[in-house]
Image 1: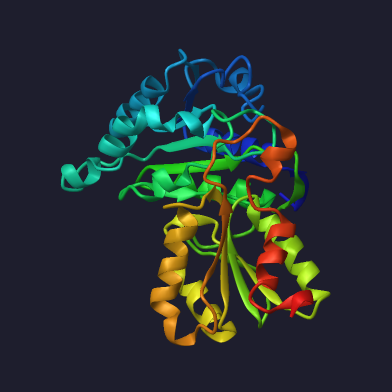
Image 2 (image 1 turned 135 degrees about the horizontal axis):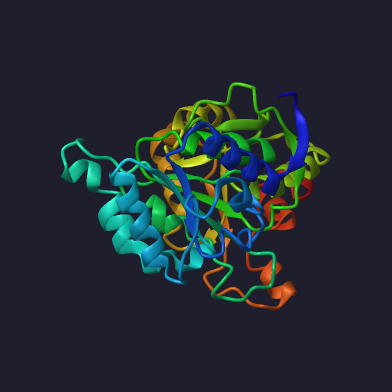
Length: 330
């Protein structure tokens, strides 16, 4: 198959469809994944090809969805469970954090949980405080759970394909603001190594580390900074567990400055963990403290203006860089 232009949504559907055609043990399970085609249309029409025994509509019960997927994975299937919103992952934390994440350890490696939990997070649809959060910190905090957050169309396809091959549970968070984004993907191209970050832009003055939709904001900010004489590198983590610090470390050591950008909240969030790790491992090379740009510590408003400005924007990223003496304000 040659390189194709498609949307983030359709790249996910292609990954699921190919996996189900290749492996009869792959099943889909979740609220409205079948007849309706998924909350964001990712599984549209898949029930027509694979039938209701493999594309399984469930009651509105997130604990039941994840619990069923855990049991199915332990008995030989490869379930892909869908939670309509990551905001409800808290309801599943016994099934996800106490069971799926720990089964391999508790059984001495005799049984694994090769499941994928697809869910949607982030802002951008004025969905209100209960449907707009970025809760990847919950997952990253739990040993035993893998975490992938694709920022590009190509990674939506390749990371999901890779996630479905992992021997352990993978939480796969898709940003709801990216589903209609277009891009190119070559399904036949060898994917980047699982757990390997991608350097999307080189730069000698500053390293911006991010993931998911904020990668695009970081790239936009880097272009603006370039017009002010500041060359910023942009690293897309792609997965938060595994975390590819081997890519980050030498880049920060060379530049001497680093920034972490996350849509999750500032306090005790992913940005805090990454900033601490960079500080610990690159301290002797840093010319300035590691900068954190993250979401406000507030519930997300349904107001589009308040929602937009409760999480990082390209303007905020640029303004934060200027505060350390780089760019137009230098």
